[in-house]
Amino acid sequence: MVEISNLRDLDIYTMAGRYLGRVYDVVLNMRLGTISKFQVKIPTPEDNENEDLNIRKVIMKGFMFDDDEDDNDDNNQDFFIVNYDDVKAIGDIILIDSQNFEDVN
Image 1 (cartoon, rainbow, N blue to C red):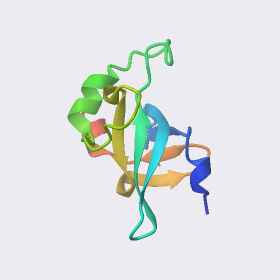
Image 2: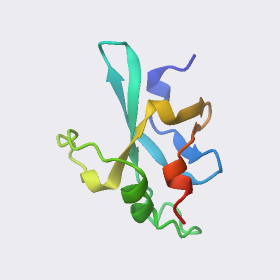
Image 3: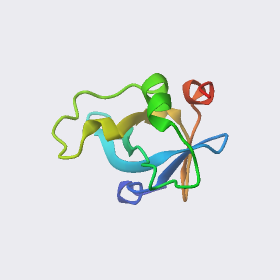
Image 4: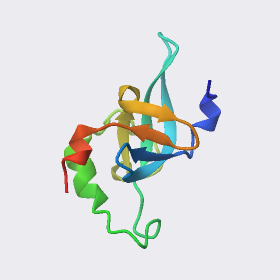
Protein backbone atom coordinates (compact mmCIF):
# COMPACT_ATOMS: atom_id res chain seq x y z
CA MET A 1 0.00 0.00 0.00
CA VAL A 2 1.22 3.51 -0.87
CA GLU A 3 0.23 6.63 1.04
CA ILE A 4 -1.16 9.43 -1.13
CA SER A 5 1.23 11.94 0.41
CA ASN A 6 4.15 9.87 -0.93
CA LEU A 7 2.91 10.08 -4.53
CA ARG A 8 3.60 13.78 -4.94
CA ASP A 9 6.92 14.48 -6.69
CA LEU A 10 7.31 10.91 -7.98
CA ASP A 11 8.70 10.68 -11.52
CA ILE A 12 6.44 9.15 -14.16
CA TYR A 13 7.79 6.92 -16.92
CA THR A 14 6.19 4.84 -19.64
CA MET A 15 6.70 1.08 -19.59
CA ALA A 16 9.23 1.65 -22.39
CA GLY A 17 11.31 3.88 -20.12
CA ARG A 18 10.39 7.29 -21.53
CA TYR A 19 10.34 10.04 -18.89
CA LEU A 20 7.09 12.05 -18.85
CA GLY A 21 7.37 14.32 -15.84
CA ARG A 22 6.78 14.54 -12.11
CA VAL A 23 3.53 14.22 -10.13
CA TYR A 24 2.40 17.69 -9.12
CA ASP A 25 -0.98 16.81 -7.62
CA VAL A 26 -3.16 13.78 -6.92
CA VAL A 27 -6.88 14.04 -7.71
CA LEU A 28 -9.20 11.86 -5.63
CA ASN A 29 -12.67 10.53 -6.35
CA MET A 30 -14.24 11.29 -2.98
CA ARG A 31 -17.40 9.30 -3.73
CA LEU A 32 -15.44 6.09 -4.37
CA GLY A 33 -12.49 6.85 -2.11
CA THR A 34 -9.97 6.17 -4.87
CA ILE A 35 -7.32 8.02 -6.84
CA SER A 36 -8.82 9.40 -10.05
CA LYS A 37 -5.84 10.97 -11.84
CA PHE A 38 -2.47 12.62 -11.50
CA GLN A 39 -1.65 16.15 -12.55
CA VAL A 40 1.85 15.90 -13.99
CA LYS A 41 4.32 18.76 -14.46
CA ILE A 42 5.89 18.72 -17.90
CA PRO A 43 9.68 18.74 -17.67
CA THR A 44 11.44 21.85 -18.88
CA PRO A 45 14.59 21.74 -21.02
CA GLU A 46 16.55 22.72 -17.90
CA ASP A 47 15.21 19.56 -16.18
CA ASN A 48 16.52 17.37 -19.00
CA GLU A 49 19.53 19.09 -20.52
CA ASN A 50 20.85 15.83 -21.96
CA GLU A 51 17.59 14.83 -23.60
CA ASP A 52 15.65 16.34 -26.52
CA LEU A 53 12.09 15.55 -25.42
CA ASN A 54 9.83 17.65 -27.66
CA ILE A 55 7.40 16.80 -24.88
CA ARG A 56 4.81 19.52 -25.50
CA LYS A 57 4.00 18.08 -28.95
CA VAL A 58 3.74 14.58 -27.52
CA ILE A 59 1.58 15.63 -24.60
CA MET A 60 -0.80 17.67 -26.73
CA LYS A 61 -1.36 14.69 -29.02
CA GLY A 62 -1.27 11.82 -26.53
CA PHE A 63 -3.06 13.11 -23.44
CA MET A 64 -6.18 15.05 -22.68
CA PHE A 65 -5.85 18.28 -20.68
CA ASP A 66 -8.23 18.86 -17.77
CA ASP A 67 -9.77 22.33 -18.19
CA ASP A 68 -11.37 22.23 -14.71
CA GLU A 69 -8.01 22.84 -13.04
CA ASP A 70 -7.99 26.63 -13.56
CA ASP A 71 -7.47 27.49 -9.89
CA ASN A 72 -3.71 26.80 -9.98
CA ASP A 73 -1.30 29.72 -9.77
CA ASP A 74 0.99 27.90 -12.21
CA ASN A 75 0.49 28.09 -15.95
CA ASN A 76 -1.83 25.18 -16.88
CA GLN A 77 -0.01 24.49 -20.16
CA ASP A 78 2.88 23.19 -18.07
CA PHE A 79 0.76 20.28 -16.81
CA PHE A 80 -1.10 17.30 -18.22
CA ILE A 81 -3.37 14.66 -16.76
CA VAL A 82 -2.65 10.95 -16.40
CA ASN A 83 -5.69 8.85 -15.54
CA TYR A 84 -5.07 6.40 -12.74
CA ASP A 85 -6.38 3.60 -15.01
CA ASP A 86 -3.18 4.03 -17.08
CA VAL A 87 -0.93 3.32 -14.07
CA LYS A 88 0.73 -0.09 -14.16
CA ALA A 89 3.05 0.15 -11.14
CA ILE A 90 3.90 2.49 -8.26
CA GLY A 91 7.13 2.28 -6.29
CA ASP A 92 10.10 4.62 -6.36
CA ILE A 93 8.63 5.82 -9.68
CA ILE A 94 5.26 5.50 -11.41
CA LEU A 95 5.02 3.42 -14.58
CA ILE A 96 2.21 3.98 -17.05
CA ASP A 97 1.20 2.16 -20.20
CA SER A 98 0.10 4.68 -22.79
CA GLN A 99 -0.20 3.58 -26.40
CA ASN A 100 -0.92 7.18 -27.45
CA PHE A 101 2.40 8.33 -26.06
CA GLU A 102 4.46 5.43 -27.40
CA ASP A 103 3.15 5.89 -30.95
CA VAL A 104 4.46 9.47 -31.19
CA ASN A 105 8.08 9.89 -32.31
